[in-house]
Length: 452
Ligand SMILES: [Zn+2]
Image (cartoon, rainbow, N blue to C red):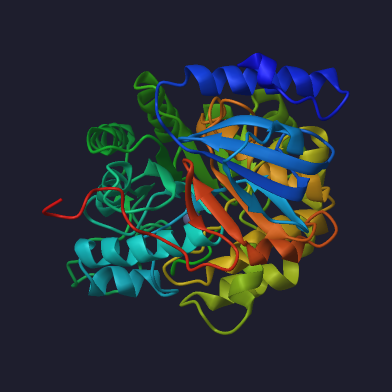
């Protein structure tokens, strides 16, 4: 078989790759078709430089080779993208699939878990078609576990959707960002968040979260921006509560994500050993230093402020307006300093794909560039670094041989025009092509139709 190789380049590296590919094809037991994707440019998620005239070969759900046109085996399907850039599928590390309305607390009270789950499925599929192949759920507005059901149905192949990991609920103190604080004390309601007070209630809540399928724990360590009646500059949990939470979650091997805006809240969460700080709006240089030392990830969700500045979308619009006037510039500068100092900054949106046009999600990366991060690093923050945060980096986040084939493409070059990311032209997840130029997208599930 190897003697049939036509050497089209005098490059021993490609000859070597050819031999490997043909050997792989010869010994592959599964009869999966091979697909070749070609484009003028490739961003592989790891290299600092863009790779020109790239070919990616996919077989089954895996990437089997990357090279130039000489690696394309005869007779395989070739997707010619031309003046486009191939990238790893994007990962959104901070999503609330069940929030299908900007006024999410009212929506929580008005609709059932099942309805939210259906809205979430639609939102997640829209997100996938916009290039987001992985999602970390940072708790959601639900009494039950619709996010876990959504994930189970996608994992089972009943529906096509992004890969999902994360927490079922956000855990909040009484009166905190996960509580509903605008109704009278006479009203007996169940809040959107999971309300706990004291280390023992936290432990119990965490055990329940894990019992029902959360593989992250989400804590509202400080007040929030979008909720009514609390203050993002205030710390919610006590150091004792934080310590109990991290200790309990870690004992089960589950990482903790801390929603934290207040400077001191960020520091207390980092000191307690959380894996990630969500938002970090009032982060200072001391907190940055602590995060570098501990390897804590930062998911700034910075585009959210700009999104909510357009129109009067929030019940607590005054908090966002105050941030836009007094906090935005400093926050952008701090994100740039954190990245430069070595904090692993990751893309997360915090918008709710059920309520927002997902093409705007990539503006988080454009804002990283505004914060002084290079376009390449901004893209890696939504691919490779995000996969590292999620513990997916052995199979996702980069385009390399052996990785799962979550691959997207955009027209032009996103390094010179970040808005190219808003025009995703091809989406492949696990080797399944669901969107390609010039053809209708396909979200058909993997299960056979009944009767087949
Ligand atoms: Zn959030």
